[in-house]
Image (cartoon, protein in one colour):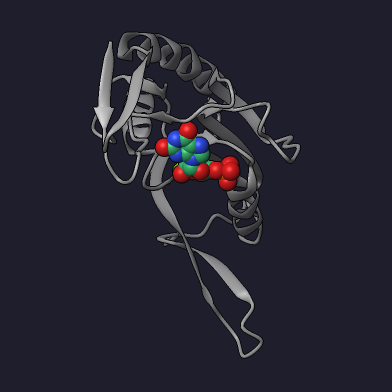
Length: 177
Ligand code: XMP
Ligand code: MG
């Protein structure tokens, strides 16, 4: 099936049913891995909102859920770019943290999110991403424990992901053609 978003063509890549099947398996892994702790799931907005909602329905252990957003602004007099996480309201000290991402491309964003979460001194950090582009990845992450689907180096939309702000509401995932 083909669709058009903002004059660009996309074709169906991953159906929602396939995503749901994958999330059931990831949910089982998480339920086992964190059975004896109360982990904190941190969703990185905006892209993660749909994935996070479906993933958490498969997590049956006691857990906390919160969301952050990356902010970048010119901080001090030296005009260095300072990045921060908006929305991290409670302490992560000594907690088991699972960062939830929609997609990891170069890994630059994730690297910064991990660095900021590390400052909070959690007991552990794991990363759960719906999509991963292995060929685009520029960093190694030992935290990358849960991956929904590995995809080619291609642009995708739907299920939280956007093209020029459009398409986040699509139930299935589409690739640019
Ligand atoms: P990096 O390179 O930092 O990129 O890992 C992560 C962010 O880039 C966006 N991104 C995409 N967004 N379709 C999208 O809609 C894509 O194929 C895509 N690849 C990267 C996304 O915001 C992600 O958090
Ligand atoms: Mg994102």
